[in-house]
Image (cartoon, rainbow, N blue to C red):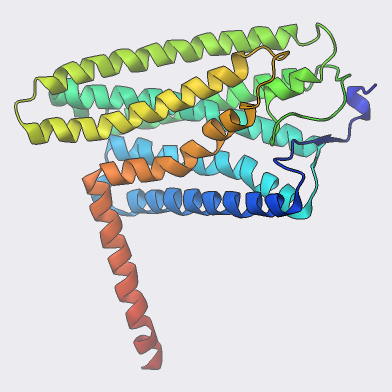
Length: 318
């Protein structure tokens, strides 16, 4: 028997017990993490430095990259370190911090994806009112609201989750600390209050998802009325990737959080990777490959860096 005061660390789920496969997991996650880090950093730097990209769409994309970079940095490095050193331990404080940061960043990202759907709706369905409805101050307020919602949401759930008495050991069936796995360790009936908070949060998330879907219904109706095939292609190329990211994000998270805790699937680990690791890694690729302006700015930035790097030795020699 355990209680909350006696727990000093938690044991995370290992992907495998075989040493060779542990090292394979380390190198695989390292590759994914570096791809996510470089991709998101490149978008952040490009949007921040290029004046032509200081528009609402790219401002929100910069915020999305910041959230993606933070969320994958919260979970993946610890899992990599555990595989490399053949351990499962994470300290109690580390688990609290990981759960808070992951919840904060994921909720903020979902709110931002909702805001981005509104941005696309206004840009395509109300182009003449775009600058009026989405001025710079409005965009800052909307982004700040997404971040603040994530912070308050994470603060509420983290405080409530770790205030519960934990009587069922300290082993988590997940490679990082998250709310459903902590609740599995709580005493009988003690988790009902947090379950209530989760249901309310899921209802709000579903409301946001309905808003996103309705926005895209209006967007697709407007796009189909565009006479130019090139115009339709451009509109679809910026909207469909966003809708795909949202659908993957929402479906996997709802499965993880609404599935009864008494039921365990062999695919649980795969689902958790789909919503915690895959989106931060693929978002930069999706948005950079589908947005011509961003691709051109990235090419210019890389060319400028390469040219100045070639000149550097000559300057030093002189």
